[in-house]
Image (cartoon, rainbow, N blue to C red; front, side, top):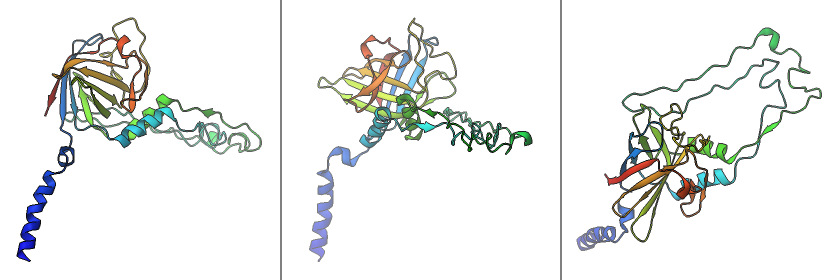
Length: 268
């Protein structure tokens, strides 16, 4: 029996050593530094910290949100007075600011409570206040766009990294993908959960191209085999499904201005 136990103990480390490296250790954390260019706040120092790469399932979920937006949602329940039981109704949803606070300077989300219904605007008129249960037209449906569908999916996606600038608040990265080329160069794509410069003009495009109105930002870094290069963003460019990366990327990288220069990679 003792001989069997000793043999089993010796077999365990041998079996572990035979496993692929990726099965033994998690993805290493990775950091990038850069300086902004072609935006109003340039030059600004940028640091990007990635905890891990997005899984295939996470990428598929975001890609599906873009290519197959959810079915149209009704604007109201059969026209119940625009969201209440009368002209002023009982309901108005509270809005939440999704900004990410710096760990050293935490910020809390704010919410605006719905105004209280007045007696005159309450239940009065079930034939008209409820949107015409007695024959009124249904409220129009609000179509869900790929942009809106992806924005909603990003809010639910896990945080895999952060982008920091001179702003107090950082940007949560909800998708990060790395593509390695045969020559050792790399493409790094990531998506932030809100638009760069959502609350300031630091990221306002300096050129003549009009700014896009996405609620998120897509960034692509292109690095050589030494981990040095540049990056561009969706501040003025359209985004589309990148089939190679299996996620959302920049539609025409070559035509966009450089937003991140002097990019350098550092494995932590």
